[in-house]
Length: 104
Image: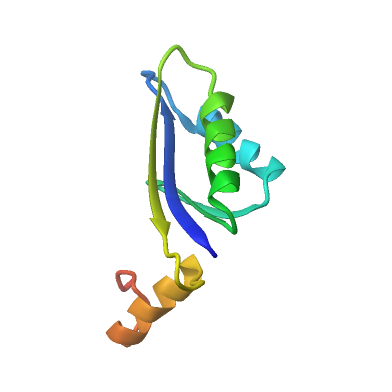
């Protein structure tokens, strides 16, 4: 089984969040997950949901702030394995082009 999630961990601060978000992303290295960070969060893939929850918790706890906002959106497809990249590839196939804006 592959479990895919979108994780967003952010300190509630006035200054740049980049340093604290980097700590959250770095915390994922200790877990058996694949991940890719984008401007809105980090997509995480794991074989087991327990590993995904543990990684998300570690990312949340890695942020050093008085207040931390964490959102975890989970896609637990239980009848078949499908990676995050396969999902993007399927959309690309339907579009007939990469699912990004064209750069001119």
